[in-house]
Image (tube, rainbow, N blue to C red):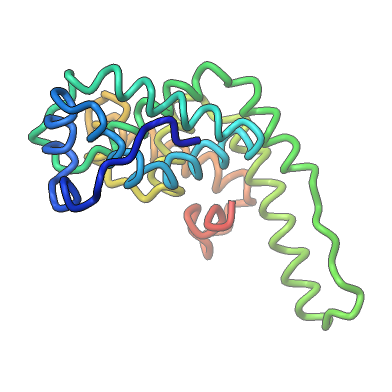
Length: 204
């Protein structure tokens, strides 16, 4: 997955992402630090959305796109992760059908449970599986914009401001999309107000 040569951490390890990217304009190998800092998170995000089989290639593509666009990065921003999530989300947008198919597959998949499990443990597992099936089915039905906002906040724990920066939309739009997505998913989960959407998605 790593197509960038590494530089010694002592050279730029204490710099902000913005400073590292600024340096990488004249010293391209410095960009490897951005990869090392954020690749695991971007890879996880892509694997969650499109499956592990394609995540390696798309994570590499994300960082290659970022590398080519690094001169456009606002170096006053100390954390490049929202920017990288935005690039990754744009790449996901090219694979919408694959993403929806991935959720349908997860909706259909039911992990085996041990027959030796206690009754209460079995009941808990069955309930969790039922919630996950409903959740992934609902995710496949969300509009792309609502799904992007929801997953960046619920899975990747971005703030509203960070999600807005990642997607290039106003914070108010993030709030309205998130509220709509939460309402639709809560309806899909039977209107259960005792569990938050983030909790339902925490092991997604």
